[in-house]
Length: 110
Image (tube, rainbow, N blue to C red; front, side):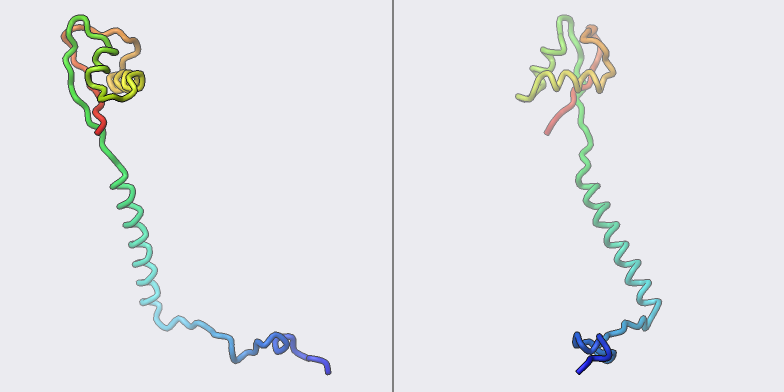
């Protein structure tokens, strides 16, 4: 006995196939817009809560102050070299030279 149609050999016939028919285009497009809006809002919310604005403390430089001594005073047990790098970066300082009666910003880590 030879099987004529291969679809019947695998147990699939035309009657068991489901065809999806779009009943309402308006409902379909509303669903798509709703899905994109939810996705966008979740991504935006995740990025907004992940952003943390930097906080700074303004410190007056006195005679004899160095970046190292200021970093020790305001470092809160953090890496002093890293804090000095950040102080220089925030204040656009190229060298380690500080002048008395000037103000510098110290990054504050919570």
